Amino acid sequence: MTLKSTIATSTAKLAKMGLNATKRSGSSLPGKLAQRLDPQILTHLTEDKQVILVTGTNGKTTTTALLSEMLRTEFDVVTNDSGANMEQGLITSLILKGQGKDIAVLETDEVYVRKLSPQLTIDYLVITNVFDDQVDRLGSKEQTLQTILAGVKHQPQAKLILNGDLELMHEIDIENHQLFFGKDFANANYKLHDVSIGLNQSQLKINDTALTAPFSGMYNMYNVAAAYAVAKELGISDEHIAQALRNFKRIEGRQEVIHIAGKDVVFNLVKNTAGFNATLDVIKLDNRQKACVLAFNNKPADGEDMSWLDEADFEQLANMSVTRTYYGGMYQKPLGERARRAGFDELIEFNSPEELLGYIKCEENDVVHIVANYTALYDIRNEFVKLGVIDE
Image (cartoon, rainbow, N blue to C red; front, side):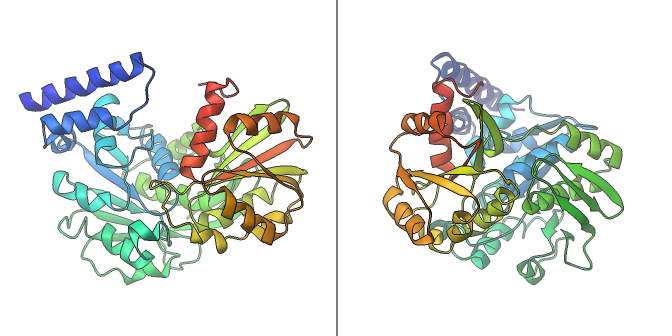
């Protein structure tokens, strides 16, 4: 690296030490400072590595974590496992995570593939899926896909790993080599089949390889298939992939289970109609009588257009042995109206995570499913950490 890059890197590390000392968060600040000192810092941090970008509407964080775990069995890997998936967050991760001498696996916001492209050489671009999401920021799913692809149109060496079960992926007009994973697409290079979904783990096959995934949800099987495809392209053995799945730890907020007053409390992150309805398929597998928490904000990070909640299948959730539902967040009033239209039996407002915690402690059911979008989920989770009910 250049002297300028070295100074920028050192400054970012000092900034992180300062944040830690004052017990403040800020996954992007060190990267912001580094980039200000060296506008080419991202190029310098990745110039000696293979670069894999993981993007798409849903599943970016899980796929990135799965792929990183698989590749670590044979490579030195750096990744942005904090979930900070925009430019300055990526720089922070590359600086603070030891830089990984072989491969960088980077979860990337859909808009930022194009913005990152001039600064690094992309070896693989994984597109998990593309659905309508944050339409006020991203536009239609067709527009979202074109925004992503703009990032590799001038990088012909980049291989595309695509979800073959989405018709949209077969309309791509680009010279880059394309490989497909999927369950329904007959010509998938990495064919997902013999899937058996359980509440806590699932069985699946990809081509001829039988695997056990340590989580539920058909959508997560696609995440496994996407990660498997890249791992195999890079020569990882099936034995090492199976080992990585055995070692995989659930990511916070994504089917994460904590225990409060003898109850299982399950965090389920949802961001759009597709994610909401897929999460219901997982909750449906839990046959216990349950309480439910609905929490939604409409901050810019969530997308301010929340009209998708009208299309989400609240009616199905209302019929899943849910005896009591708590609802809150910035979008509380329209959320309550939507839940009432769906026929929920008992609806209770909460106005703070602390108030919600009190309700959960008194809850008579053995399980509470929290269904929330990004900022609402972390408002609750972070406060639960402060209140001492989640250890970190």
